[in-house]
Image 1 (cartoon, rainbow, N blue to C red):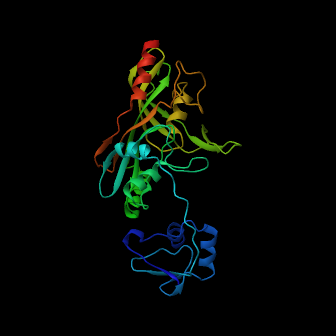
Image 2 (image 1 turned 60 degrees about the vertical axis):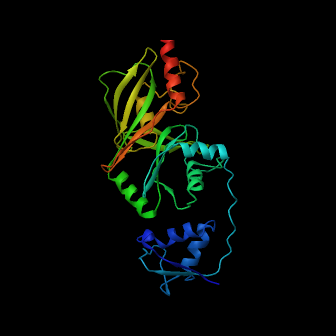
Image 3 (image 1 turned 30 degrees about the horizontal axis):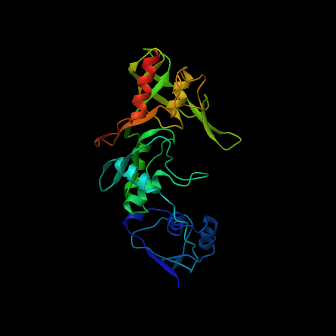
Length: 298
């Protein structure tokens, strides 16, 4: 039997191909594009283009297709319970989690389970999507949208710079008092092993980070960092560019850490979206414990 869909408000404006890729998981994207181009997919009983924008009430018909159920991701109860305790804000549009350091936001490669998989499991809602990303090693605020409409609104807020984010960063050495802003363009590149990195490059994209000192000891400085733009690894690259790499950063460090450090000392502390409430994510014990040991050293 053919499969039929009725487009509801959440999917208004979405491209037909993206809608079907999402709905028909895990059918390969290549197969879906073939069906559309061959006229096997009908919208309101007519052939449709790949890039057709859906309207409310559109009726989509696709031919019978065999879908293998994706393997169930095994999520430990202890991890689910821990992430449930890390939920720091939720409303009808979004969920905000204080992500632990070391947990990727999504699965991929050798990573079997990401934060998004755990949150979808907790809420029994596959349609929850990441509104943005932070690095695996970074802890703190991660925002997820509960509906496609909310996702589009959140993406708009991020793209229009209507989001203010603050990070706590512990960096190597004595940060200079007069260095309150780093305005250096950043470009991305890929290592031969597929690892993504970023570097200062005058031909790159504009990148601006504001820094202020919260505390200091002889070997390190605790900073508040505000990324005005949102480039890959921006805070880490900008801190390293002035000789004060984030402690625990194996990608961009230029010297050894003054003490043994098991994590990247970067935490997404707060986020405020489009004049909404400021959502705070407290640093965890490992962050405070590391600062205490640094102060004992000097």
